[in-house]
Image 1 (tube, rainbow, N blue to C red):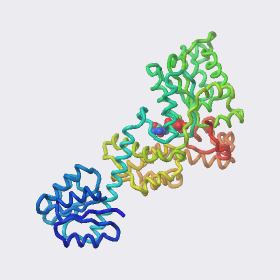
Image 2: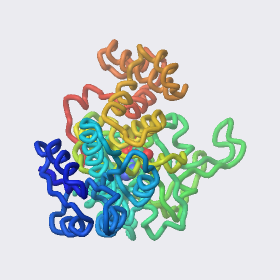
Image 3: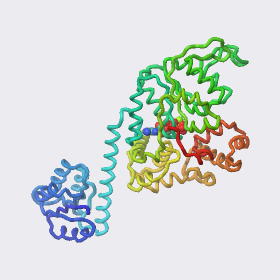
Image 4: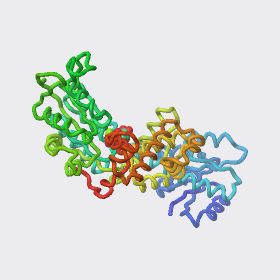
Length: 465
Ligand SMILES: Nc1ncnc2c1ncn2[C@@H]1O[C@H](COP(=O)(O)OP(=O)(O)OP(=O)(O)O)[C@@H](O)[C@H]1O
Ligand SMILES: [Mg+2]
């Protein structure tokens, strides 16, 4: 039972407060300021109800002494109706709330309950923020779970090596973030960092993109162009979505990694390069190898060191920390007051599975923060935010009622269409792609981006480590 210290020189008031609250709380009481300070130190109450007008040292004095020792314990001050000034003064000195005499029973109960809640949220936020303050040396990577701590130490261990690193994990788990942390901690941080998304470049362009071309290599090649390998020389090349490379490009990539040299399109002699390769994928490469979509020899070449980012649902203890971090960041960027999460909001976030992982968490918090100017984000706010996603049929209404951006509506709509097309074509991707008039690669890329499961992922849930 929580303990409340009631301080008032009028015995009748103490008595009536005791009667009102004694069923829900343990009550200790003091009738003078000296006694109050003494009891505060001895009893360590969870909340204090404090009359500020008392003979001897005043209640404000007591408040000051309490706040010097405990910044967080909630203090509700009692004031006489006509005296506004002392109440204002008390709030400035850190009182949690105030109540005027004579008070209403329900009002008292309500204020006490509210003050307890405010204090516990403050404690929680203070705790989270202090953890954010002494976080890892990777300032923008949040997480204290065992999995994340292992990742931090791995990044440090391999910082000064040239080893090729393969980062795996579901969409939205932070692969790009880890890739850039690897770069920033490496001895190559002053050299170029070139990132390329293999899935976003059409098959017929990827080779010229990676390796460049000589003048006259093909009809449009008016001038010589350097490829990403050349641009990254001396530095780091991040091959994102490496699992989406076409097989013949995989063969050429393998050659560059083995020989440390490449040949421009239409160019005869190979060029030496010194490039550290970091690759990432959200595919299970073991499955891709089995299905003949990824070369096994390339897999062994890039998988010298592997970093696997577990899905957020497997490191739930990081959720409150991430949520507070994102919320604080978004508030700061928008110049609004920082927000906190109610207890049930935190419970909801801890219980949810986050299929889109950290990206989904971020998007939800951004959406919820933008929609409300309340200081406390509740479960209802989050549920409303979650519910408004992925519901194509209600989309139009949502856009109007929630002032959602055109872009986010289009994204949702696209996702809906892809899911519907997949269902219609029995999840056969080549057929679905044809049906939609896009290439299979683009389909796969979008499916990954929107975290749409293939049947293959549904039956084989394993992850590549
Ligand atoms: N541990 C983390 N701490 C803070 N922010 C994170 C963390 N992990 C991911 N994020 C943020 O979540 C978002 C998604 O992360 P990122 O783009 O690195 O995911 P990804 O694994 O590359 O996803 P995809 O496979 O879809 O490309 C980014 O905004 C990133 O900054
Ligand atoms: Mg990524």
